[in-house]
Length: 134
Image (cartoon, rainbow, N blue to C red; front, side, top):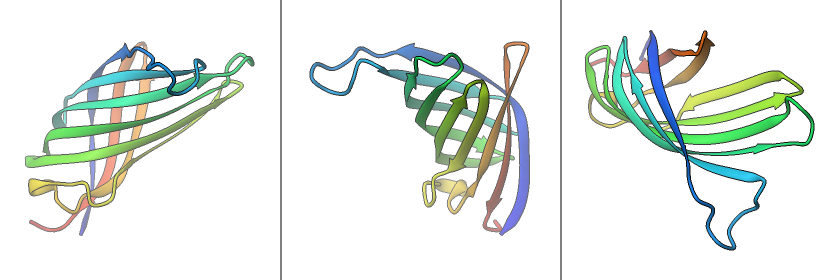
């Protein structure tokens, strides 16, 4: 396995999904995610997110799953990302990891963690990952 680093920008579209009758709670929103990654990761991703806010300003949480398909440093395939984020009165924590054994094609065996930075409304990612030697 070799440790690698990938970085770039990405575009994201978040679309609210309708609540299903009798399923869940009205305080939990469900959204469809569509992303386009640029830079070292040339890929698209589709996913879903569940999010909730609390009565306390600045406190909320979300979980999400994305399926990423494209190429990473020239190796093509797909993998899944698992998100877990919390805002505690404005203090954010976010953990995004590659789902174990989710890689396909030349990305089979991928593991790692992704970080997101938002700067002046633009989204950027950094992915620290490992892949078996080609």
